[in-house]
Amino acid sequence: MERLDLASLRFFVSVAEEGNIAHTATREHIAASAISKRLQELEAELDTPLFRRHQKGVELTPAGEALLIHARNVFSVLNRMRDELGEYGRGTKGHVRVSANTSSIVQFLPEMLNRFVSLYPGVKIQLHEEVSEVTVRMVRDGVVDLGLIASFVPAEGLDLVPFRTDRVCVLVRNDHPLASRESVWFEETFPYDQVGLEERSSLQLMIFNAAAERNHPLSLRVRVASFDALRRLVQAGVGVGFLPEECIRPYEQSMGLKAVLLFDQWSHRNLSVCTRDKESLPVTARLLLQELLK
Image (cartoon, rainbow, N blue to C red; front, side, top):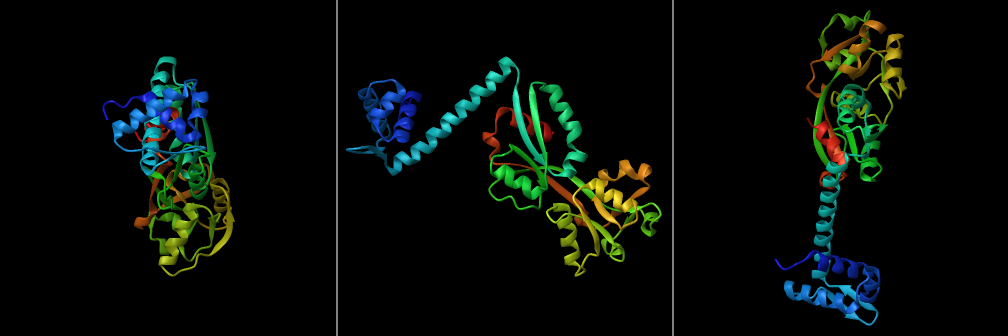
């Protein structure tokens, strides 16, 4: 194995992709006989055939299929190394695509992104505000590099890293019967009409699940798509609502609202960063991930 060289591996990958040594010779600007010699030496070094030869070209053996996976991984690592070291020499440039739920954007991202763009002024950030379910799909489809989601949302096949924890509170007007309390149990909100979020919202799903565990249907008078609309309707007296604490506190005085804590343990909600594969992220995305995890 010590005698394996990158040129032979590159020729091997090219032949595997072309399925033909002559076509590979044209692609690599080298004599077909030189490529054949390299492949023979590679097979001798590994002591196993990598190709089956036939009239139209070549096809991989099972050993060849296995080597192709490893070879591509080797070149992927080398490319990332080259790109990352190049960034140090010319200053980091590029862009990062991020999708995040509203809770993450409102509570945590502004200061973090401000620090990041101060450190890397050449990096542009494209930020999408989406519910966690949509964010998972965008990460899985490669539309974005990083996603910030509620941890309980299914994200099979993605890498998840703990991000932050927020606390869900009851949002009431400051003249509401519950406004005199600092903390209440979830069940104490059941007698009151509620303003809820749209069905896709992970926060609203958490509220529904908590109510279902207590065999109590929620009395939703209105459902809205944004935190702003929910706060405004609660202010108007339509009902009580549920939002993360830091999405209520800044509005208490100006809007006459009150954040009432919940005793219930489920109100402490974990958030995560998700990626398709954090080891293969572009340089700029890995730098942002490092900042998010500080």
